[in-house]
Length: 280
Image 1 (cartoon, rainbow, N blue to C red):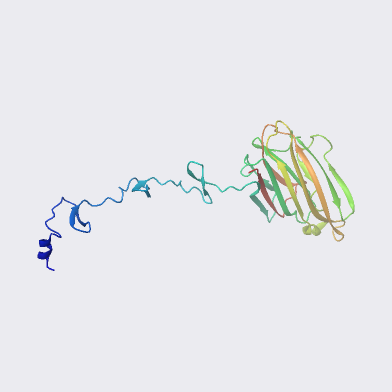
Image 2 (cartoon, rainbow, N blue to C red):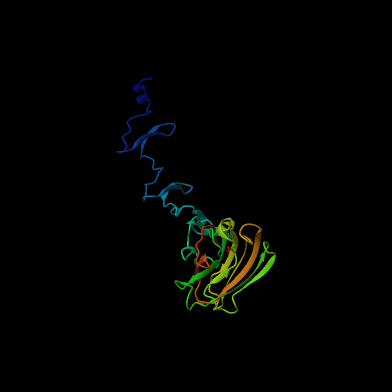
């Protein structure tokens, strides 16, 4: 067919319309109509295209900002939120002290012992003082200061030890009452000279840190260590359990704990892992 025939048949005809319109077909004839507005105006920066069921709309993104690394998307019941993944009840690992050379203290301070948890545990392994005989002591941090030394007679401790090297049982007593400025843990092997480099201690210590209505806080531990009766032979393993009470700063939370060589010697080796107990 020729264009003349099309025009003559009225398939196109002279269709003027208005400026900006387009030529469309309804299946029978051609007509000039406005451009369809299927998509909405773009809207504000960050908007997303959504369907209302009968038309498209430019609407705000219902998802929150991504938040910090490791967050998960959760529902509050009325909106979405980016929140830390729930760990649930149980022990949560918080920090590690890894000692590989001469170090005076193993310390967990207020940056990791906070009001987030009421109860903490410390798991220590491979604790050693090198070629010297030594025991472990500790004291706590509260009210912005380390609670140890003159005028800080706020500790009481006791324990029991079974020494397989000597086949004896010993008790550890603080003398009765809150009369100590620190806590003595009989949890490190003893012997003579270079043999001590072969000894190590492992223990788990638990402590409640929250102020308890002006009541003393409790700290307890259990562990084992190896030793010898003469430094050259008769090696044995010892089992020990102990407990301590802290009667100071009764209205303030404990916010740190510091371990050290009771007679002033430095740690040579050991790892110390701190855990907090989550309730839910």
